[in-house]
Length: 357
Image (tube, rainbow, N blue to C red; front, side, top):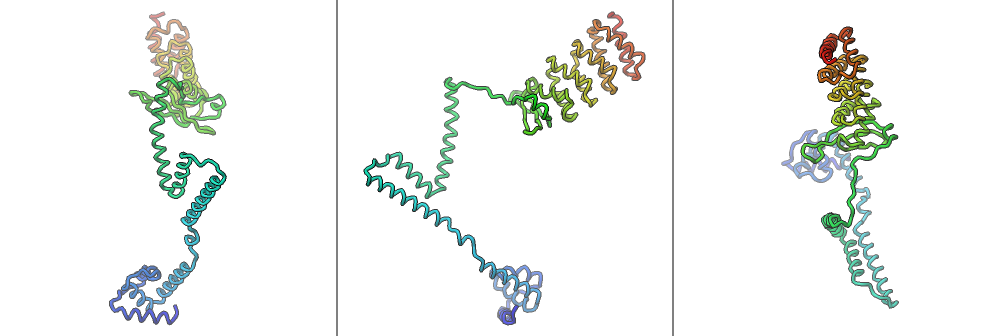
């Protein structure tokens, strides 16, 4: 800071006897207000007195003053742009062209514009002059049309003028899409009926797909059957697939998929859940074959225990007399199986089977 400026600051500080006393920390906060000429008189006096005694604060004040001077000399973008002036000039130009066109038409003896055309031109000019009013007008028109059109459409359909069409919520899935997709999640969602639920399948593919439908929906069964048969997705998704399809076990194709899952799924928990879903259908030849195969060849004790329990229930219900394989397998297991529980269950089933034969 120049000596002359220091003298002026010193004199000003001495003139304000009631000036505040500040230290470097408080003076630093007041420097920007001082430079912008927004400090109170007592604050200005305190800053001036402090910078006369502190060289560091004086240097900081000089930087702030130079910065404010640079900002004041920079051109402002707002000063170079006058949107209101340009809009007014454009409106005047369009109005002048419209007046010229009107005079030309009159001079040539052409028929003057009709009432609707004049109204339209007036509305257009008003919207140009008052854009906010024009926007509000279109919003109100949209609300009015939105309230009137659905009622008119419903009345037309009730009168039979427009045929109703069924829109399927779930898209058809092609074989190619099945090969390239993967189920990322299975969710149960309310279907609008009392206590009813629909299944929502989220498919991960090049273009994600969401399929919604009941457990008996053909697309739902087709996708879940493909997931289970091909060991796709993770085990949790396959487990959820079994839970969805178990409500459709009256379908022979669903039972076939559950049987294949019971024998070939890589996860023992999924195989066990699939066997449980087949409960009550032991009279089906495919289901009985699946139980026997799982009991003889599955490496998981839990799956084999479920299979022998189902076979024992079949014997006790009197549905196993026509299949000699059941007696042969149960006798062999009761004598040679390494699992004690399975030996006991097989022996009990054999004892129940003997009186029936």
